[in-house]
Length: 115
Image 1 (cartoon, rainbow, N blue to C red):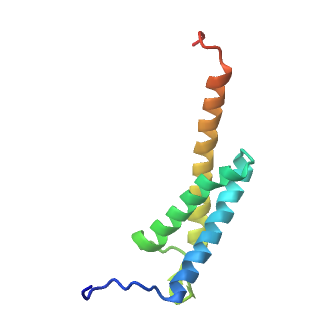
Image 2 (cartoon, rainbow, N blue to C red):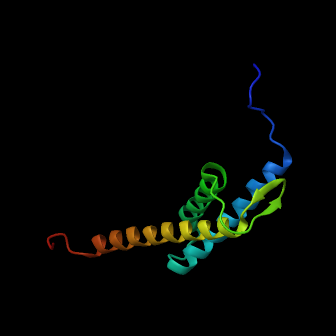
Image 3 (cartoon, rainbow, N blue to C red):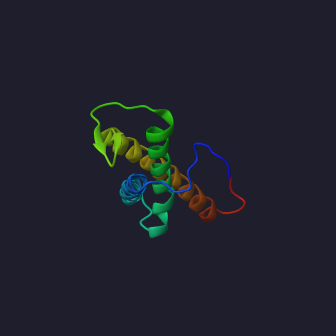
């Protein structure tokens, strides 16, 4: 298909970083859902996706690196910063999810004629 920077097979260390960040995102999402509820397995999805997207943005797109960093799987990663950013993103997403669910529940519980 033509020469270029794209290589169809990623090295194994890239998969290791993605797996690590997926585990971190799931842990942050589960923690945020547990703190802010609802305590259902499906409530972990949105905070976890938010945490993963935050990790992707901070680690891959922004180039921002604050605090100590370390070599991990062949990459220089500021793991403390990344975990904090993921946790904050998961908490914000869980809080928004909780607000939407509370508002939806309030609308369902209120009488139709009342304002």
